[in-house]
Amino acid sequence: MKIGVFQMEVVTAEPFQNLEKVRHILRTNDCQIYVLPELWSTGFCNKQFAELAPVCDEIEEQIAELSRQHNCTIIGSMLKKSPAGIHNHLSSYNRGVKELEYNKIHLFTLLREERYLIGGNSRGLAHSPDNGIYGAGICYDLRFPEMFRALAVDKAAMIFLPSQWPMERLDHFRTLCIARAIENQAFFISCNNVGRLHEKMQFAGHSLVVDPWGKVLAEGSGEQEELLICLVDPAKSDEVRQMIPVFRDRKPELYQ
Image (cartoon, rainbow, N blue to C red; front, side, top):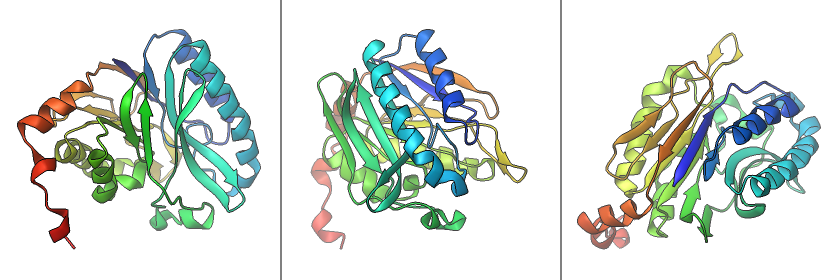
């Protein structure tokens, strides 16, 4: 399975300009799965979220159509308005069909995301005829291992993490991505962005594809917009789980 991780430099508050970047990647490559960063169409222009959320509905429709045209799966998060408010909403479209959706559960209170966004209340897990069982989280979710363990208990062989992680905490990002792969014996695929939000916020890049042993199969640079292409065999997750039977030996009833 060929996976393309598009480490974008997101243009803040310019959804159609960002969409054109994605169109170009799809036209010039032939991956089965493409992964985009967190809020890839707008970035964190918090005060414009209400204005841009309806535009993101149109962008999502175009992503669905692009996944159909290019016979692929496209995973990424965008703004999504609901009766409760605006969500950081991850979708996965496989050949035009939405097979996974997830609203970011853990809002990053350090940057006051809760002022502009509503947290989700359910996990993101897909049973795909083409991609097998896989799950997803978004950025800050990475610091909450229980969520990813729940996906692995439900036999997710791949876990995707769109993010906008800053350079100053790059060591945390790399360490936690590798740890999530090892402890869950699953492929962990993170797609981070590059560039700056403002003078004090530089994003880290270093998107990662980590196998169930914790081996880094692909890693992005710290500053360059690029497409990482990596071959992944989801069956390796089952092989590792049989070799080291963590899920058979765990005793969740004793962890409370």
